[in-house]
Image (tube, rainbow, N blue to C red):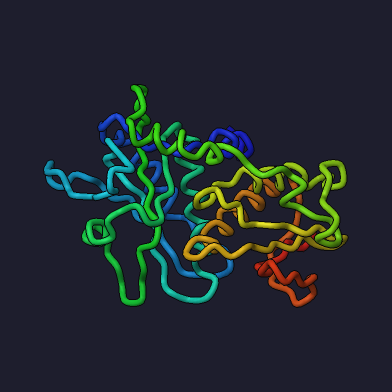
Length: 269
């Protein structure tokens, strides 16, 4: 699968078969995450941990949100400005890689037992365990009551805002059309499909002649994480389509009282 197909296929999986990952999958994931680096020069890493230790179960609590998962990826980073966004970018790369292996995943930012997972990772001074995701074989059986409740209680988890509510051209009074998006149509559509906490979809993008400026609405505890996922989708898609450019924090961006500027994608000349 290419990156666009992988993003389109991505779904949150909460119920797993209970079977541990096969050795080849563990090796592939370990090799992939070992070479990942965050963008923007920030320090973060991903550890793959098992719910088994010497053939004994290890307690990894998720408050009933996840069932049957034997392995989890954990996101760890050193506290510094902008690191959450950079770390989330990297973690989404790992998530998409696992999806490419036909494995299930699910971002967890608060619905897991921090103390349980902290016992299984090697935190250094100034490091924080921020995100975990189960990774494993999705169950083909019927969905559990809790999972049914999650989907049924909030149908919008499977929906996205329209293109013209998220993306703008030259100013925020002028919604960007799919035609005017031109070569950036697919990268922006992959941003639109990015997951976000409670499906808030905090990101907004303003297209100018020389750049695309990324902004976010405030959503405490998760807006910086969600922005990292969106930036990952955008840049990986641009790379796949051969669109040259780079992220840069610039002072030359339009202000918006309701939005916080994050970063810009500068087109290569």
